[in-house]
Picture (tube, rainbow over the protein chains, first blue to last red):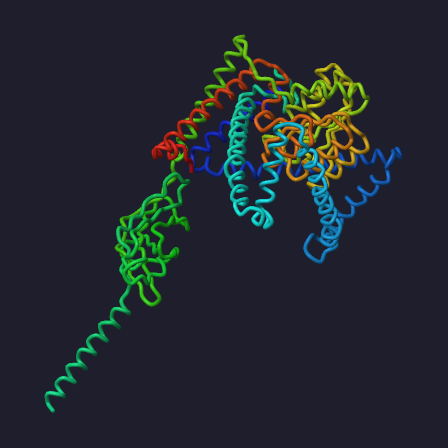
Length: 208
Length: 388
């Protein structure tokens, strides 16, 4: 019974959503938006579980004084401080929460994002090393596209931007669309398996 | 003298006549729009009426002074008209969705306006908005869904009947055992990252189904499994899936819920947290299965730097090149959704994969036929496939 109820709910909800795609009139027409709102509400409540998990894990680390427990203190103090400031003084401009968000959280996120530039450089180096025919092709295409997108390319050969555009418009788009079609079919197939109850692993159970 | 005066008067009369006529032409209202029709907006949930008209004779031609059209509406024929919208010159249709009630007859007049004057079209016949039971623009989609679902169900029933089905080898999935085995031998943990989106994302769901298989294998081998998540719901679902996997493997004692933990909803905060886990725990095998954005390369490069064997799977085309570059194996798009079936080897799941492959073959055939038809200027297939 513990497994049957979620399966029945999944089947009914999935079938209704498929039907709703083809029926514009109410109550079917607005179902998708309504379900999205329901999901947001459930997810908001589930955040409590996440915070509970954070407090439990880091509380344990502090009480056991495990390696790096000081970071757990920083995390829990930060969590408590932001919660108290947000609930107590609001999150609008000129509030302590807003100040901390813009002067601590945003710069930290930006720093992580900025690391991407270095990772792109190291990954590109590995990808462009000429080890095989495919890698050589990739390197040649990348050089043409990169040069074609900057003024220097035009100076080297006036037709280079057109060649770069051709690579992006035709071979690249064709490849991307092939992947997208495969993804769409995969999603439909997976959805059918889930709606029909053939795929149940997401519920935690096996196939029986 | 009289003759001179007569000529002068005649000249004055002619000048006066032409002056009046030119002024009258400049001050004339624009020609009204013609063939104005109003009808229920098709394929909607009601509350919409579409109005079409032929442009004024002074719009883009003639005096060419029409600035736009005003749409006037009334529930009474011949009176009570109120403006509901304006559109620019050159337009020939408008869909009125402003407080239109279903089953109420509405009359419309389209007014052509220039800088000073306007002229109204004839009143339309009454139009009534009503909701539709079927979106006819989606017939092709319905056919595709029925055809594809039929194929999947057919192959599932064949598989249930014991028919042998060949599924092409997928290197990334075949390497799952190898990766977990390597982690076990090295005495290091396995790290599973289910993407940064929530449970309403199909890729996350596919990631969790693969997690279930990975967890079972890790439990059998005795390798510790770490699952940091960026969503609370994903955390609870992953905990449930891993717990069941450990039970199925006969190792419920080895299950530790604290290893499936919530980090943060923040994209780069999550990336920083997972990077920290990688650097501290030095996992021997890392799985990236789900929906990823800009953090994909940050994670995969850090994983590469700690020497882990990495298997990624995502349906985000923009992130695939990063994973292909930084990981040992990458499941491209549809292969992510095939993961659970491929790993379980369960006949019904394999049947659905076979149906998926046949669906792909049909789509390839449609693409080839479409290319041929379009090359010969026949647009039937293209128009039929277009949905709205």
